[in-house]
Image (cartoon, rainbow, N blue to C red; front, side, top):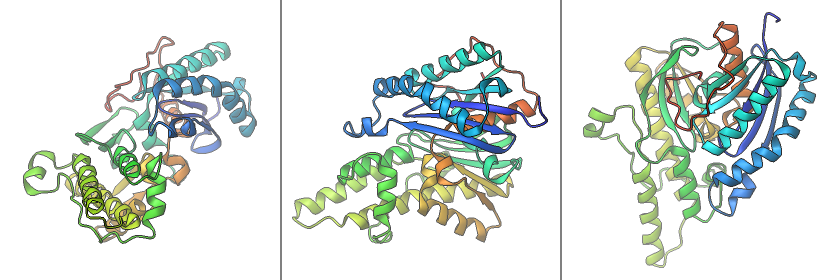
Amino acid sequence: MPDEPLVLGIETSCDETGIGIVRGHTLLADALASSVDQHARFGGVVPEVASRAHLEAMVPTMQRALDDAGVTLADIDAIAVTAGPGLAGALLVGVAAAKGYALAAEKPIYGVNHLAAHVAVDTLEHGPLPEPAIALLVSGGHSSLLLVDDLTAGVTPLGATIDDAAGEAFDKVARLLGMGFPGGPVIDRTARDGDGAAIAFPRGLTAPKDLAGHRFDFSFSGLKTAVARWVEARERSGEPVPVADVAASFQDAVCDVLTAKALDACRAHGVDTLIIGGGVAANSRLRVLAEERAAKVGVRVRVPRPKLCTDNGAMVAALGSHLVAAGVAPSRLDLPADSALPLTTVTV
């Protein structure tokens, strides 16, 4: 095995079939097949459709990644696969494929945590992780704040979503405004033509009474409802809905809460590095606001490029490479897929 391990990663937790190949912290291939268009007419991800799409995409996506990297399966030192959390059926496709490839090629296998992989992918952009660090993970299913002391051993959850995650709120508000699915990218684009201060939407769990018990937790359900009621009131009165202003004001409310709580966590734990990952980390307003606020308090922000923020195989390979380099023992070949895998479990 070379000094830097050559690791292949398989990601199938939701609607993206991702195969990534890394050597150390260097990304060699990041092949992706998305089934998002198949879900758009339903307004959200349909688990059975996603599972079937993974089955159809696995082999060609695997071959494309190997070709892009200029390697064969025999050259790979280890295979990492998302074992959870995620959609049960989708996870099973990826885990079963990883077992098959690992068994056929006689390679060690690592079943890894999808959320920890969103932290690890930053190493492909900015090098080794500073430890400790605070990680803000924001996606369709999760909005979490983590203290990362040693990614190979686990992370310490500081806060999480108690109802709608940020990504879910983006999707629901986009549907409300007739923008389609997925909501994150289209709201981001539309908000550029709007005024983020036009409408005073609520900031969930930021009142003093909420901070006492939910200092680092998130809630976007109330915000989603407030947007719906505001739009309904305009429609009842016969007034036009200023879609760009609604999108911008909603987006500002989400990003305000995310960045404020993340930087509060940095202060509370004496940490000067904030890592932002997950699909919502691709949001342009979140990236700008985090940089602006962090600079004022001496915190460095690390955010991967947008393509690496959404679900992909590269992030799984990056975490696998981190585990192999640290000498962590591989998983058993009968490793399970766990749709509710806790954040404290990095490998299964």
